[in-house]
Amino acid sequence: MLLVGFLILLLLLIIGAPIWLALAASGGYWVFVHMGLPLESIASQFFTSTDQWILLAVPYFLLAGNLMTFMGPASKLFTFIKDLVGHLPGGMPAAVVATAAIFGALSGSSVATVVAVGSMAIPQMIAMGHSKENSYGVIAASGTLGQMIPPSIFMILFAASTQLDPGKLFIAGIVPGIFVAVVLIIVAIIVSFKNTTEKPKRSSLSETSRSFIGAVPSLLMPFLILGGIYGGIFTPTEAAAIAIVYVLLISFLFNRKDCTAENFKKSLISTMVTTSIIYILLGGAQLFTTAITYLQVPQTITEVALNIDMADWMIMLVIILIFLLFGMFLDAIPILYITLPVLYPTVLTLGYDPIHFAMVAVATLMIGQITPPIGSSLYAISGHFKENMGVVVRGSFPYLIGMLIATLVLLYVPWLSTFLFN
Image (spheres, rainbow, N blue to C red):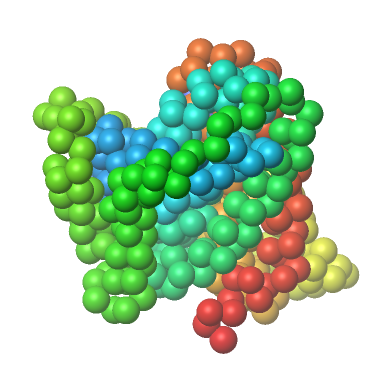
């Protein structure tokens, strides 16, 4: 019966069925046939998967990010960073990475970051002489930073799956997120040397000052959110709601031109679509994980890992490899819900810090978003800009290598993830 359930999952994925349906069908088979539970329990699993207070933060942060995109604050943020470093060698790609990192700290969504920052930066990069490959590649890679730098949707889902404190995960993600961003900036500068680009005119001090003043409201938002969470003023879910109010306020005060009912409607629709996708994935994944836990799959794998003649660091490399292989064919959210019930107990038994593992897992899932043939950032770039997928993949390859190196550093230097709690 265990084999039949996995065959159902594999067959549905091969024929291109929605991932939530593949997970729900295999999990439902185990729940109904093997466990003997009534059909009503399947609906119940879908409900309980989203019946968690922390998961309210998902649509809230998504809405805040969409409001930043459609209401104007995101463009002012990019303008300031471009004025600050755009004239330097490799400055424009570096500005893209920095903007994506900050925007990720405002939205928590990689797709929102890719579309928002890409729409502003890619036409300018190509006009300056940067290759299409590099222009698309740096956007695809830097867009994933929103999953590491808080507030991260991945961190929220990880916390919901493992009962960890999402506030601690948010704080722990700051230094690793900055580290990965620095690695991407270095790669961007190196790659840019191969392009014959027009050196942009250095912005004057008055221009930079004006753009800085325009970007201040956006720059203050991460400090408001993380400071409130870390200071115990509000919970991550409350912080997400406050983020919406804050973005609406700064949009009304400083971006009256873009603060329209039509842009607000676009933000709501985009948020509802993305939230629905995430929540229905959670339902299917909940069925799947409930069944495999009942079938003792995580316990068996933990026992095998403890008895195998292999060093702990080698086992962690194998776990990273599993994440990377899954990332080639699945989106990050189902990967989390498929693997965590199996791998998380094993990692804890090996003595690894759960927060450290969370940072390594999220970094690896970020790589999956730019790994062909199925990478959400690759598809977001290709679809939004109507570009051939091969061009986007070639451009993202150097950044993929950089992210692999950064992930290995995070694995073997746990201090980067845990020193704030020691």
